[in-house]
Image (cartoon, rainbow over all chains, first blue to last red):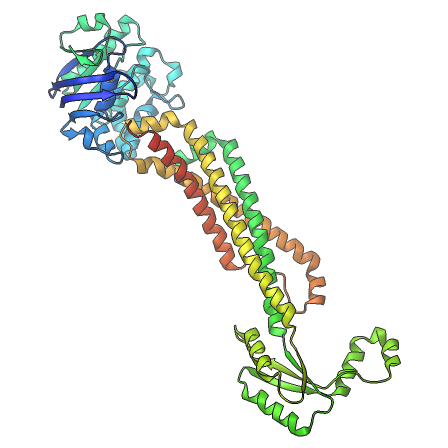
Amino acid sequence: MIQVFNLYKTYEGNSPALSNISFTVHDGEFIFLTGQSGAGKTTLFKILFGWENIDRGQVLVGGINVGKLNKNNLYILRRKIGIVFQDYKLLNGKTVFENVAFAQQILGSNRKNIRFKTWDALKKVGLTKKKEAYPNQLSGGEQQRVAIARAVVNGPQLILADEPTGNLDPDISIEILELFEQLNKQGLTVVFATHSTEILRSKKHRLLTLNRGKLV
Amino acid sequence: MLETLFLNIKANKQVFLMSVSTTVTAFSILGLFFLVFTNLNTLLLTWDKQVQLIVYLEDKISKRQSVKLESSFKSHKEIDSFSFVSRKDAWKKFKNTFSEKSKFIDVLGFNPLPASYILKFKDSPDRLKNIRTVAEKIKNQEGIEALEYGEKWLSRFERFMIFLRIFILCVGGMLCTGLIIIISNTIKLSIYSRQEEIDLMLLLGATHRSIKAPILLEGLIQGLIGVIIALGIVKLMHVYVRYQFQGSIESVFRGVDIQFISNSFFWAMIISSIFVGCIGSLISINQFLNARNRK
């Protein structure tokens, strides 16, 4: 699913954000990506979903060479990936249902399909009863569930979760982790970025550790 | 897409209305210029049709010279017809025209006016040019004292119309440029108010086209609403001016009717508004998306 070869990334005038990173993530795997704040986890994620350029090296996601994509065809890559952020990135003016449906609308799905798939995604995360609520009426954990539902509604092959439990209590964090585990059991490849030792200890998955832009 | 468009407009109502007001103002100014131009042009064409070449004859012109002149007139196919005005008829007409000054005219005691031929030319786009050409050809013929066709003031009016055309083009160009900037800034505000949503759309795999489409439509609508209201204002002005001044104008310039802007100007305004709206939006959304390009 993901193949990274000798990846380098530097921001102007600064020391390298990523230095000689090489790793592979197989289909259906669950990987923890860990490291201190500033280690390069978010930069790596941004490269994987095409938000940042590569200085050197090669990155393949779902068979797509990320470096060869231009601004007009990046959407092809992003439709294969579901992204979950620490700050949820929900639209406050839309209900839970509308937030999840938004991802389907972008694909140009018809109304019937949108309703069906959105409902299905909300069932997966256990939020069908809150479909008419607005984000500011939800708890942090519930908001993150909505974000996860939105990430999976389009049937991606890969989930990139960038510190999805960073703003949540430990108990809720474990619940969210369980949700990712369930998605992984259904066949989704998951790369879960975290620096929480409780999370890392709770499950046995392969670990990729970044330290100052290098894989340890 | 329409739903997104209306939601965007609703979310930025004030800015949208301000932009439309500016568009209305700019296109109203342009429309008024076109209105003035259309009517001045009509006036010019009316005068143009009324212009005749008057050939004033020498007092001692002989019959032979008159016949030769008439043959010359017949040989020019641009001339539709000609008529002879004797000295007596000219004097009678003069006295009728200035009947209020009849006391002064009677004091003169003699007829100072010459006999003349009035040459009417055929209708054609080169009518004025034909008058000038024929005038040049016949001016030195025997028996002719002078020629008159209002050449100087017609030329000046024509030059004025050319200047007005260029002036309107420049004003129109400047107004359109200004409007592009204004609409671009309005759309920019609209985009930045939805920045989070657009970023999310990019992350979720929206194509640039699907992001640009509602934005372009928003700019187009701003332009169209603006120009429609502006045309309404110009029409109201036209109706008012016609109501107030048509009678006065007709008494001075017979057959001249105060017209609304011509079809070509009408469509030029509509197309300009669409162009301005689309270009303004395109500039903003492209700037935004380029800033989102991978670093």
